Image 1 (cartoon, rainbow, N blue to C red):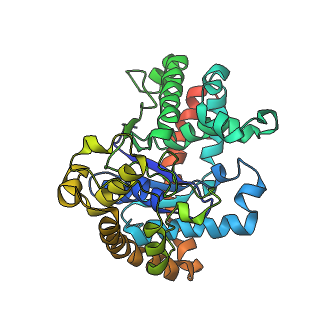
Image 2: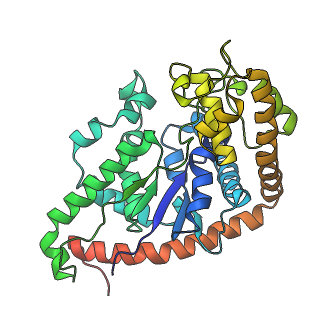
Length: 350
């Protein structure tokens, strides 16, 4: 079972997909399918780690899962050429997580900053799932022996954990791995991060120091993928700025987080560099720049919103995409798990 170059990534179905999800993840997913074998997963197991109040219960989870799938397809991901599925349909994710739980060290998980941020001050009341989230993420990736993972800056630490787990598994079971035909003793690859594009981290429209988030109480902090043209225009025109004109060079964006964020959004949506955008708009007032940004956002996002709406209205089609994707994902996952069980020493029916 040779290692094949393969991209894996996932998006949580926690509702209200926004411009940050689109530019930080989905746009790159679309680009990567032109050059890589891609597996894109709606990670519904991850979605339930923070309790029913966050993910909204069974009916809401199902709606959100279909919405993320619709966003993938509406943005240009081809579910026939690549694999699109929801995580819970492939049981290998949870089985491999348990094996990795016995490989990973508590000290490694204690260093994960996202748990501390999400659990807040009441860590003792956080779910075990939230604490163990990074191990499930490692299993998601390594179940398909993926070699590359498109990640934002906030997920790089989790990817490093995946690499550590892969290395320790290979070391712990090295003799068994070699007996199963892997002469180098390498069964799981160490996945590499793919960080691309000028706006991998999109910030709030109300505070350029905070990441754009669905959990922000102000809807004006984000542009939702389902927003209509008028709503997009209103949000951009109300976006926080400073009184100075736009700089002519990137260095001038330092210590101006809101300006940097809006220029980054324009650059990403237009597939240009920040320097190029500033070459056009530098020295001008924000009002004129915002008008151009509104036009660009509406042009790029309105077709996505329209197609998402059409797809969500046809849940049978969306569910069919997920079932087909899960069948194809399971074929890869089952092969990995059969070998993993043998390597670990589990007796099974042949």
